[in-house]
View 1 (spheres, rainbow over the protein chains, first blue to last red):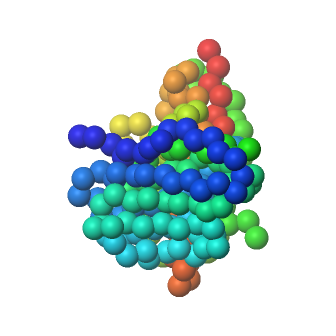
View 2 (cartoon, chains in turn blue, green):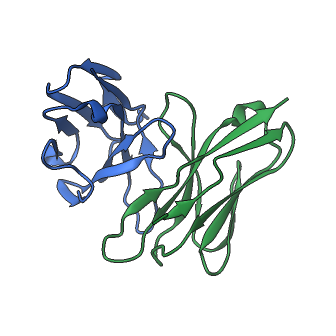
View 3 (tube, rainbow over the protein chains, first blue to last red):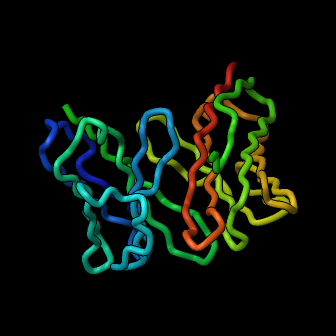
Length: 115
Length: 111
């Protein structure tokens, strides 16, 4: 069974440019997460979807970040415009959404470098 | 306000048992406490989760006291391949139900 797929794996852009990340979760997983991970730190949740609905986007900087999960499967995370401080690894994860369980399956991440 | 606390790093030798503790106040009463392992350039990988007392699977044990203010991941007989960063994941109490990863514990296993 395929795991969580993310693309691209690496992205280098100049500040003020837009960037988008794509995630394909494990088939059948209703819950999808986007995290940001800075070097030497734990992942920080940006947004969590239950099917198509964003149920927790309280940590998403909405002035420049946006996300969508059309049809409750694939998801895209966008940054526009990117800032130097956005350089980090962006992780996508999915889970089956069993009550109380936090067993998440993570993709390899997209490493973003903003110059 | 620290939500979770883990030791930054730990050293061990092959064959030893390693215990990593995460302190977490004010976590949600209905959610599991979960632990992940992460290798460089990879996403975190699920190890184990539990609600109370002790849980054991083929790779680790998890000890959770009755007050659920901490949890201890136990890795029996570590090998060099267990060198990684270990994170606890909890859900904060309150209406937000916010997922919080710890800062991670870097485990270095030496031969």
